Image (cartoon, rainbow, N blue to C red):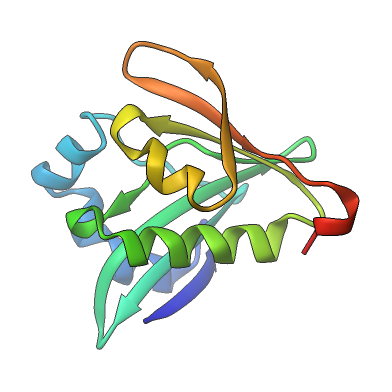
Length: 136
């Protein structure tokens, strides 16, 4: 599996995710919330043999890296882990990482260093906490 990091307006991004972000099933996976992008986003896309397995767009603003939607085919744990580990590796030295996570995905994020800081009805807010010695 490869993880590709792309800017929010990169033409390669559209070829990797457009067929997914416009798919009714994938939009349903995201609880019918549309996927967004702009030049403020960095997308982490998991691929294997030319197939997109999942993606996590991250909005970078005001010292924070914010995950507010994502897609992982079949909720594959290995894909979740690969994407989240890459995001932490690439962004943790410059940004506080936080995410709005669907309740059903809490275990996937917890396994990868996130902790719940706020509960809502269908989502939770999670953050990565670091001791300075642990910073990647």
